[in-house]
Each structure stands twice: as structure tokens, then as C-alpha cells.
Image 1 (spheres, rainbow, N blue to C red):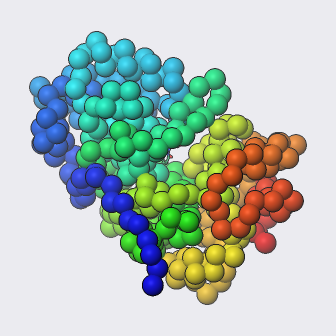
Image 2: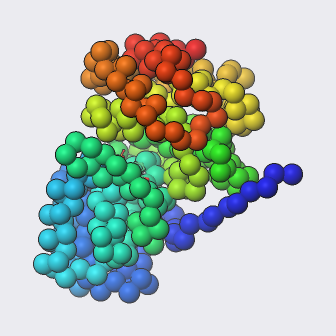
Length: 352
Ligand code: NAD
């Protein structure tokens, strides 16, 4: 029998359609009387909607959230927070907006009510990545784990189908790596399998009809489970490579996950029980890395790092950075096979 440790994370979750209407109640339950509402500039209209629901609890908006949580943006948000004397944070959006809310919580320990509108999963994790002078650093802190998450499926209908696919593959990556995490456990693995299954079934439907509410519900449910996996156990090679490519070479987050995933899984094929569970979740008789490549191709997801703007000449440096720190992974990180991996991913070749 396996000996394991399971740490449940203390986030309350409300899941459904039209659940944004519970926003004021969730704030009240956490004792929030003056909420600061966060969005990206692209989702500022959502802040207006939240404002109408919050009524007198709405203390003000900050709509400048940006990718990779730049410290400069956080500092401006902190000044706004002090000016409006907010005592709670409402984050409406994807990982970028949620990241800003977490950055504020890290500095203030204020409660966060998060309404995710992508499948990236940050709302279920105690992880925060921040960028300063071009360097992205990541840490885990219980202070950034959101107190309350409202999943409202109707808010995901506006996420374009291409972005939905990329974001869904990002979620699958969290669950796939959880299956071979060195601190994995049977509960997280159950969530991982179910999350991968739900998203894999939902994405083809969303690609053909972005307004299919049943598929949207399935994808968001899967994203919740996959995000929980990310929050509960350590990630391996795949997340490390994406962190290096995003942080040091400025590649876009979800797209990079789409490209790297089949290759990282192929690299880690030595984790045989995890591969069997992954194949089962993907409902495939193929090797899971082949199935992931075919899934991404069938969904018109990016397949090549060169298409994301990485120069081929950057590959040796990326390998160097990826190997610089040790971290848990089922297969040791060796420069030569990692370079082969990145060259295949750069060219868009199938994983081997
Ligand atoms: P994002 O938050 O950057 O969103 C991308 C764009 O889509 C933004 O312009 C946003 O406003 C828009 N958008 C979001 N939802 C929409 C919707 N429903 N309809 C229309 N437009 C919508 O993208 P993301 O992939 O969710 O987040 C990426 C960031 O999150 C990265 O910085 C990544 O590092 C971070 N992240 C962190 C964690 C963690 O646990 N800390 C986990 C996953 C991702």
C-alpha cells in the first residue's frame, strides 16, 4: 500500500452558471466591506458588471492587470488600494488578473474572491509568479491562496475558441504532471484523471461551437480539478521548461504549454503508472504523448516554438537555464536529450 500525505487547500468553491450574482454574498461572508475590483483593460466591462452587483461594497476598480504580474503594475495597484481603503480583493479574469490579486494578497493578506474566466487554474493554487526587470520568480505562500472562488460558466463563453483550446491544454498539463509528482497521492491523481478527461472531451466541442454551454461547463469543471492538482503537488519538467521559455525568452504562457506538453510527457515516459492513467484519461490506445500531440494538432493549437518567436539559436541557453536548478522529475535532466526535446518542439515535430 502507498504511504502518502494529502493537503487539502482551504478555498471555498461555488460552481454554476449565473453564479456571479453571489459576489456580494461571498464578500460579506468574508467580512469584506470595501472591495477593490481587478481586471485587465480588455475585461474592464466585467468590472462594471461586478460593480452593479456589489453596490456599496464596491470601493473602486483597477483595470491594468498584465501578463506575468509585473511588480511595477502591482505597486500602482497597491497605491490605489491604499487610496480607496479597500479591505478585500475581487479578481475577475484569467491568470494575469488573478496573479495581480495574489500579489496584493502577498503584501497585505487581504481576502480574495476570485472569478476565473479562463482554464489556467491559478485560482486554486498558493503559487504566485512575479516579474521584475525581466526576471520571473515564483513562490508558494498560503497567503496567496484565494479564500473564495466563484466559477460562473457563462463568463467563459466570450473566451475565443483558440484561446480556450490553449488554456485547456495548459490545464491538462497541470494534471498530467500531477500524475507523476514525487509528492503525488491517490486523491490528487483522481482529480487529475477526471480533469484531463473532462477537458479533452470538451475542447473539440468548444472549437466547433464556442457557445456550447454544456461543453463550457465541462471544461471549467476540468480546469478547476486541474488547477487543484497544480496547487496540491509539485510540478516537473514540463512546467520548468515553460517557466524558462516564458520568463527568460518572453514566450506567451498558454501557447508555450500547448507546444511543450507532448514532448515533456514523452521525455518522462519512464513514469509508467502515470502514463497508463494519462492514456486512460485521454481515452487512447496510443502512447499518451502521441495522443497529446494529435489532440493539439486536431484542435489547431500551436505545435512549434519557432511559431511563438523563439530563435533556434536560443535553444542551448534554454537547456542551460532549465538544468541550472534541480527539481523533482521522474527522469533525470540531461542536456543532450533535453536539447533534442527542444529542437523537436521548436520545429513542431511529433514527440519521439
Ligand atoms: P490571461 O489572464 O493573461 O488572459 C489572456 C487575455 O484573455 C487577457 O486579455 C484577458 O483579459 C482575456 N480574457 C480572459 N478571460 C476571458 C474571457 N472569458 N473572455 C474574453 N477574454 C478573456 O491568460 P491566462 O492564460 O489565464 O493566464 C496566464 C497567466 O497566468 C501567466 O502569467 C501565468 O504565469 C499565470 N498562471 C499562474 C498560475 C498560478 O498558479 N500562479 C497558474 C496558471 C497560470
